Amino acid sequence: MFGLDSTLTILLIFCLFAAFAFEFINGFHDTANAVATVIYTNSLKPWVAVIWSGLCNGVGVFLGGITVAMGISNMLPVEVLTDTNIHHNVALVMALLLTAIIWNLATWYKGIPCSSSHTLIGSIFGVGLAYSFIAENKTISYVNWGKAQDIGLALLFSPIIGFSIAILFMYILRQFARKNKSIFKEPASNNPPPGWIRAILLLTCTGVSLSHGSNDGQKGVGLVMLILIAIVPSYFALDHSVDLNDYRKSIVAVQETLHKVNQTTLVKADSFEYAKVNALVADLKLKTDSITDLSIVPDAKQYAIRKNVLVIAKSAKKLLESESISLSVHEKKSLKKNVDELKTMTDFAPIWVIMLISIALGFGTMIGWKRIVKTIGEKIGKQHLTYAQGASSELVASLTITLSTYFGLPVSTTHVLSSGVAGSMVASKGVKNLQSGTIKNIALAWVLTLPFCVVVSGLLFLLFRAIF
Image 1 (cartoon, helix red, strand yellow):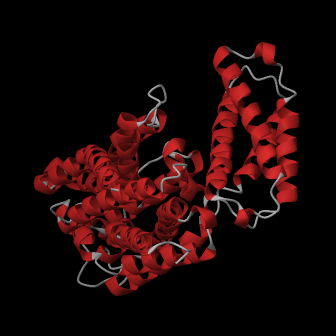
Image 2 (cartoon, one colour):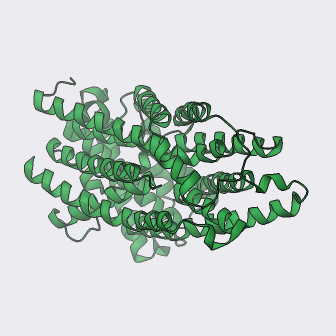
Image 3 (cartoon, rainbow, N blue to C red):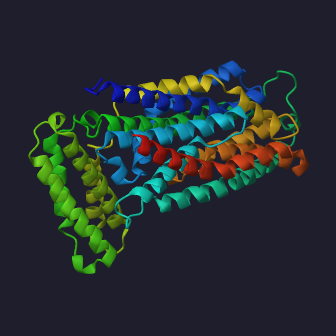
């Protein structure tokens, strides 16, 4: 396979299987975000809800593009991503995958809602931190501390947001649906909710499922691409379908825009980034000018080109965000557009990868969903989920996904929905309406997710590096 020896072929198959297994587990772990409320309010039969959610999750993978997918790999140090030692790369992907699978399976088995996104992100931070101990250059930060801070704030505020907004929605429903007291009572036998409540729940179930597929599904795509780039760079480090003539034009356009910058206005840090990006763009032009066919370029050169593009994109982003750069709004847009064009060589995913992740996530959604759904529907509060509580919680989750996607915030839908259900329970009968044991377990998993994944992935990475 791909011209690899038998050992690397086995490792490649194992890593790909682990990536699809992670996405499969992600499916039945996070299914509850979409289907718990429609099931427990009798809006849909369980089997209809999970099949519909599974289909929407699968479709969502195709609708999501590859921005999130590439964002996964871009959180790792560039030095790690462009290591020409394939065995080191295998150590990286195995550490990430095994940590994420272990934590997701453990929390699923206990029926504890937990964010798969934060599980994966914690694993990535762990690898970066571990790499800093063995890296030759100790002056570089191998952990994206800015992103770590964003994740920390998201972990802190997600439950507060879900809890508070659910209480607010419950209050609004009480004000506008005073005459329809049945929506605040436990559903009678198998009776479906009033039409307007049911419509809200079905729409939000569909929206959450599509959004989950487009977001978390893309993380699976990113993992598979990470594996393929790491083990078979000749085929996947660069997109061989890129038109090199158009690509060279984008390089020239970037150079022309950079030359318009008044260097005397740049602060010291920006001067460093400016000099670096200029040198890298010139080097990229030199490397690509001599290429006629990307498919015959040696692995080392493909990695070098990939590294150039990744560092150019990061440096250009810093410059564009700086107030000291002397470019007009139009020139900044032009620079960003052409740098994005350069990234088309590194930011891509074959259709078969997206298809397989879509299938894994979709089928995972349809299987093994009961544990987490039962926790959300029965074990957070002491009463059966009412129509109003279901609608409020699902609206919170749907609204949060939409806003977090729009603003690019790493908010966990799992945390928001769980805390939203808790908030709706408190809005009904006060704090006494919560099951303290379940709340403590969810809170413990919420607190331990990042530390566990950071430590375990870091240790596994160092262990596998020593073995391989």
